[in-house]
Amino acid sequence: MDFKVILTDIARAIVDNPDSVKVTEEIDGDNVTLTLTVDEKDTGMVIGRHGKIAKAIRTVMKAAANTCGKHVIVEIQ
Image (cartoon, rainbow, N blue to C red):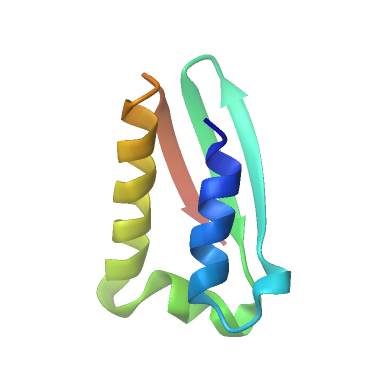
């Protein structure tokens, strides 16, 4: 399963400037760290009020990772 593509699709659906969405992936065994970078103006949309959208994104990514037996960490910059 390509976690990078899943996170990119989710982020592009949320932000106003989808061309600025970039996701980098680091794999260390069963641990996958995804770093999401968006335009400075779109950061608030990705984080949401009190971090609710960011928490929802992380929950979806963890659920997807559980199907493969992996552990995903999503960092937002």
